[in-house]
Length: 299
Image (cartoon, rainbow, N blue to C red; front, side):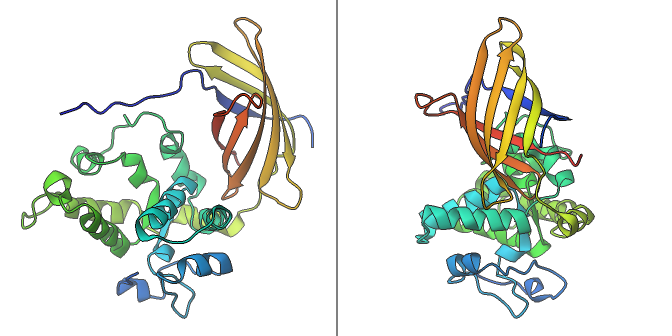
């Protein structure tokens, strides 16, 4: 059996913006319960998703309203809808849908930060409290994909049913042979329904007071480049006209070891008031650039 391998791009710089500001389809019975589900009032989302995901009188859309996740989680879902279900979405509409869902059905800082290694695409070597449940999930994908989500109990069950539909051998590979009691997947569903519910105090508090991040200005920067050591410099963040969550950046930093200077230009979106996702390059010849994943602190 071929060995699964991972690759990572050496030389990526992990940056820390210091807090030093120098300038300015099917709906389950429980999904009909008025106490569950997040209404969706965005016309773009309703138009893009409504042909398959019905809305009820409270504005809740089947499946969608009963889940919260990261920008990457919503992006992955939309990619699956396009590739497997032939949903006709142009890139601009897809970006608008991801932005709305990330902002209104996202994660609070207390929920996102502990599993930020998933969004940062770091190695999936984080031990989980239950080794059996970890093995059930990581047979096919990272556990971070699961821990970055919040669902109702019925939605956790539906997503495992979806696995069975797409991957018929999953019961024998990971979930446990049907008929065995208790099957590994049933234990996992019960566990995540309790530990990762749709409604949490953290999300209620954050979503009620969420506001655009105040980032405009020039910020001190310090960080560490694997193999090269400490870096220091500054980043100037400028709002994109007509938006309150998009920014352009001009960054300069120096490697302490040899004085080498790097200048980068970039653009970013801040989802859910704190989740920075961007990309920056050193110039036209830098086609790949660096993907940026940062979290904005409350202060």
